Image (cartoon, rainbow, N blue to C red; front, side):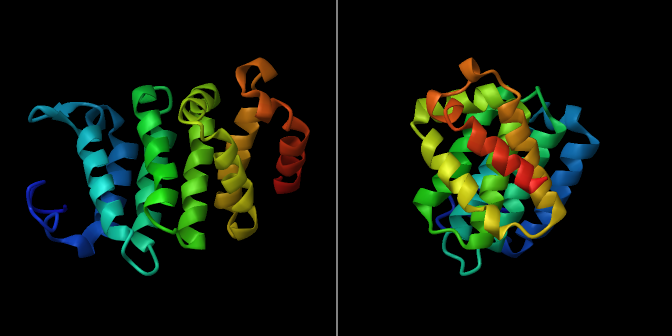
Length: 197
């Protein structure tokens, strides 16, 4: 996981450093995005990061408070925020990781909120592409139910901002660029956006 390789039965060792590694990854992504998108030793850093994320989330699924999952979502958000327009091919993977957490484990309220904040940032990154991915997975309605369900759990300004950015990106699309179920709910989405602001 942190040390070791994929063939290790327990995934490696050094799990207690996930939080520190995530902070370093966030800094790496924001300070040197060109290198983060490059290849090293036959593999891209983004591919290595996704492997780290997936292995960390497997560990997180068995933890009581799921705090490792919270910091993992911050890494995904750092990718979306700092690499806008440069990782379109990774967006489906980000959404699969996020929505998959509701299947693979029962997220705590805080972890579920961070997952949905990441989904909101996917909309900010590229709302039309996010809708396309959600529609292909048949997950649009479920994602929106979870998104609005997490609203009461938000506590900090930066959490509200993430939802505002995502919802603003949605309402800025033309109704033809979004699924009918969402286009029909635009007044509700606009009201929620006004209430958040």
